[in-house]
Length: 190
Image 1 (tube, one colour):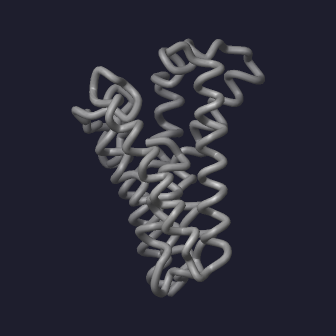
Image 2: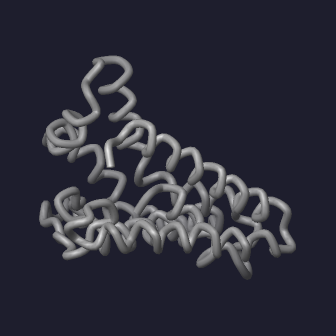
């Protein structure tokens, strides 16, 4: 699942009730599991000049990369953080870790060859989903439009929110999605 979709889904699922005011924690938790990949990609592409096809076909699968990515996608570590937040009654941090967990649950369902070790450090096992969010050979042709539908439908829901910041997040996710689609169309051969 693409990062903006995680933000939208997590806003819709978690951004209500007593967590309505925790928009920053929920948005941050939705983005946090992907940040390591963003930084590793930027380092490879900008600093080292590695071609994008090499990054996603080789570097991504390097054990050092996988270790960093798995740290940010680890259910046990997220659970430990949530437990500490709960014990300290730090509701914003609890919302953050709940958002990270929701991100990882959805990733578990749509990552195939690029699956994460979600039970690290207890296990290096990776669930290889039959569905891929990007690979058309494994339903990527279906997941992509469903993600777009979630983005647009979710934005419509957030536009009606009584909280201005949730309306802004809806707009921001729409803009990020348009930018991502433009990037994909101009940089990747379809």
